[in-house]
Image (cartoon, rainbow, N blue to C red; front, side, top):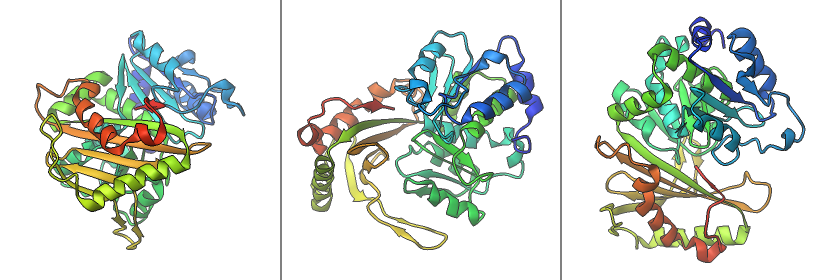
Length: 358
């Protein structure tokens, strides 16, 4: 990390009396690393790192860094006494970034890190390319266009990024499921992401909320949300996906208008051809694509302990300054209502509410 970041600059930031951080390791493996880096090396106050002892049962915590399972940190940050907060999952690859009473959507996080790459010494020669997983919002695409670099849209799974790294075509990548990384290691890296954010804050002298809002003003905003329905029976999940595939095949959705003027122009099941080795990955997620560039995506995930997890993603881009500060719920409500209605999710699963909303 010392070879990647300017530790002197970050240390100076963390020792400022009016800048306070809180890093929650959730009793996972990052604890010893975070304590050594943030407290011993960067000289942040002793209480800056919490839950830093790795425990077999995570001390009763659910080490998933999101607004639901890291609620203690979210509530702490809402009090306004800390300027920067972060949480890690059990094995330390995923992270959540918070500012003073503000949440950084992971899709925005990777875009903001890429847009501010010049704050990180590791990238002094520029970026080779950037990549995001298909369900991740298109915020990173706007950054790639500005800098004139390649943007790769891959299936979910870090192995697809690794191929691009090995070929020397990728510098920064990320996914909406709370993971960002770079070509310094062949996996997403939670501590790296936190140090990247602290580098940006130290360099720009701006608060997290200001960094986010300035980014939206320059690049536009991709409103994004993900609804997770966990521990659904595999039959119900598969039946729902088959129902959607039939709709895609029949093209019955094309031309349909959502109440806010969004018109469906295409539906497909995402297929990826690896630009390095030509490997083909089919059936990576059902997409409903709109004329405006908005998207609705449906995927099944096997990451849960039992049953299946149905994930619904909604991504809507807006460049109007008068709109970019709306709440995601307000901006995405009509598209999400449409997504739930055409999927018949309640009929197939009996669920009326998601388990987790990101």
